[in-house]
Length: 610
Image (tube, rainbow, N blue to C red):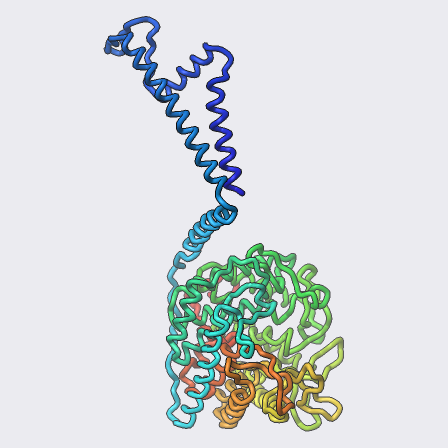
């Protein structure tokens, strides 16, 4: 339609100009038009006074010249007429084209513009010295039994990847039974290849380099963030930005860094709120943000806006642009100023008013990774960000006081605080906390390192019991400690196992800090159960009832199964020199990011990064 309008305007303009030539009111004006045209297009000579000396040159043959000028004028008029007719013919030809042909031409022009923009966006970023990367090696164990188990986990990864490659390539996730792509609302309505991005570093660590290159090629050619799609800021940050940054640090391939920075720019409009607390969702094309409809009083979620720090600090480090760092530090400063009921952080915060929503505190869903990132901000700064460490210590003390209890059977669990009352229920998501307590033991105040390592061990034991008390030896989504029930799910919708990693994550951290062989034993039990009950010919699927001997499948191979569950299992059966914890910090999606020794790097606003 744009081309039609332009062609019609052009034709009208030419017709107007040419028509005016014939419809001027008298011959004198006609002559003036002629003279003006000659002045522009042909050398004009004033012949009204005969021969005249012009600048030392004498003009002869005046009559002959007049005849020649008339011929020139006639040729000029004929040329103008011919050009006009040609333009009209071209316009007619355009109008004869079918709608499909015209749409194809318009799309071709649009594609050219998009390609030019992509070239502009793909310009290399300023070079930044990479941190000293230690521990990117095979980590192969000497013990043949451990090596065999590790190889089995690698084979499971290959099975998951190959089926995704065959049946769901480019889609966010895989339906392994239906053998087709799958997506959820956290990724919007676009095919962003979430499984590819999430799995990259696991493939690299396992030495599956052909598969890694397949993923890299898809990302280079197909991963496009200029789509009209509403996505979860939190999920896109931990899976996509975290995954791309980890792939960049492990492989050194610039495409991953460039894509991470492009995507981060698309998330920044989510921070355009009265408080600077970001919306839960943002449209990647329009930049319009909003919160989940189910969230208390239109609030943002603590675990979502509080789980950006690691990735955003790395973005500022790699680009030299402090905007990312400043966004997350603003969130921290705001939280520091707020009153906290009983020292606890509620899960809901209104981004318009800056006030807490419902007083619900959880170390599981809605709250979990906020506490994790306080600790990991300190670790990632080479233990210089003491502000983050203090916030973590204060929060854990309040959690111990109000949320952590022992059951009648002696199991330590973490409940949920709801409006002044403790709900004696623990989610699978909460099981990550055992590893967090162990990771934060060193550096804890009042010489309580031993206490927190023991607390981590107790949580690991409780979560293992939640697995061991099921028919499938796989853990439920949530389990209660009430009315004589301990570490067992009661509701049907809590009996699912959706390939979650949190229990295995805690086993791995506890193994790294204690080398107690029971953690490898428990990890192997989980590996066998997953392979037996979740493996299908088209990949791996979650199951709907871990207490049933013949469970039904949910038919979803989650991207985090490749990013986290299989990675943590592989690391559990690898040597400690593969991604050592003194040099790497794992984001909440298990993507390893290097510790930043930033003594010589300035990130304005925090002395920890000077």
